[in-house]
Every structure is written in structure tokens, then in C-alpha cells.
Length: 204
View 1 (spheres, rainbow, N blue to C red):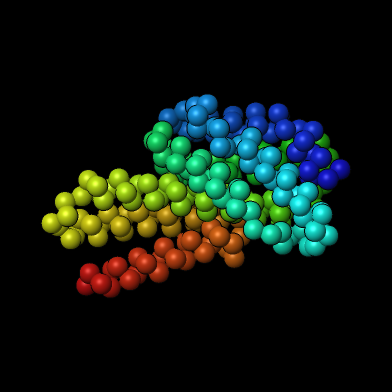
View 2: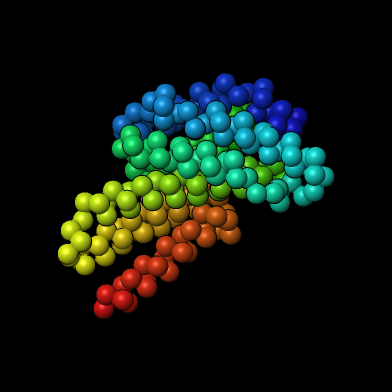
């Protein structure tokens, strides 16, 4: 059984398990609006990506870019921000999908090929990067609007806090093993650290 077929046959159970994982540790609780761009849409887009990879008859681990996943994840990240979720919760939201898929596939004796697992990780990587980016951008806007423009150190602290949040979110995803260091999440972590260093040196 292919991963696409597995996702189709077990869609309801994967969604149920993922939402249960989110609900067990998230505060505030998830809502129907928050979930609109979350698990169900990601699973549909993942299946579409897997089918596209098969059509391309290319390496399953190297699919074309997935702009639809990044765009919908960005909306999901914005929804999570509006509902008061932290950047760690944004990352965990997608990590829970990976855990639900791998746990259920193990229980039901379904084996993911290396290519399918690489595609899953790439899609998760793009989703996490898109969600974290939109969450961070919105927080940056809100923090800047509340800062006193006459105090440069306040603006610097605001930016550093944002970058540290981004870096922490990226590191958390990498430590959980749901994405690779060479993907979009790893790149975002590196960019955040580079900018933190630049801001610290500028403020010296």
C-alpha cells in the first residue's frame, strides 16, 4: 500500500489522533477556525504532492516546490497567532501530524518507502516554515506597533525576542526529528542566528 492510499484509507483516524495530541497540551484549545487550514488540508495537499511525484517518475525525495502547502500553512500560522498560540505550539501542531501517521502506519503494518518518508518530511518542513514565518511576521508587526519609536533599545529588544522565538521554534522541530537540517526550517534557523549576531554586534 502506498502512502497516498494509506492516508486516504485512514484519513479520519489520522485527523482524530492529531487533534487529540494537540488538545492534550494546547492552551488555548483549538477551534474550528484554527483547524480550517490545519490537519485536513495538509493531508489533502500531501496526497496531491505524492501523486505529482509519481507522475513525474522522478526521485520521490525530491518533489517540486510545494507553494500550496506553504501558503495554507501561513494562514494556519496566522490563525494560531490570533488565538494566542505560541511559536512552539505552531511547530508541535505539524509534528503531531508526523507522529500520528508514523504511529498508525506501524500499528497497521504499513511500510513507508524511503522516498515517501522523504516527501512527508519535505512537506512538513515547508508547512512548518510557512506557519512559523507568518506567525513571526504578525507578532513582529504587533510588537513594533506597541513599541516607543523614540527608544532604539526597545525596538532592538523586540526584534531580538522575535528572532529568538523563530530560532527556538526551528530548533524544536529539528530536535523532534520531524524535519531535516538542510530544509526550509533549518535555513530559517540559520538566518535567525545570523541576524541575531548582526544585531548584537550593531548594538555594541
